[in-house]
Length: 116
Image (cartoon, rainbow, N blue to C red; front, top):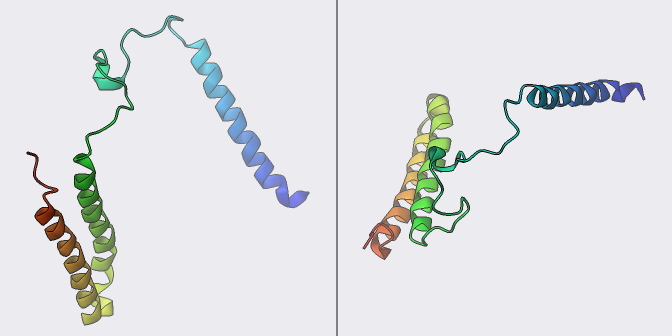
């Protein structure tokens, strides 16, 4: 049972902190009434549901954004090791960029970037 003591102490400490935060929010509450304006849309009255559906043309744009986001996720560590690895790292990164470029060219040809 001694090997579980640190985990139990951590769990009980977290429970005490959570209970203290809930207690402080209950004690320091200014009013009991509900808010008239919600935080959705920066306090303006919502004109649609917060989980409304998006038009289908946003999804290809999202996929292109994620492709370039993943490019940056892989490119940053690459810049840290490119000198140590050498020419093979440069070739691999340009192959990766060519695959991404092929995806963007395909999306462009299919009209994913056209809004009309």
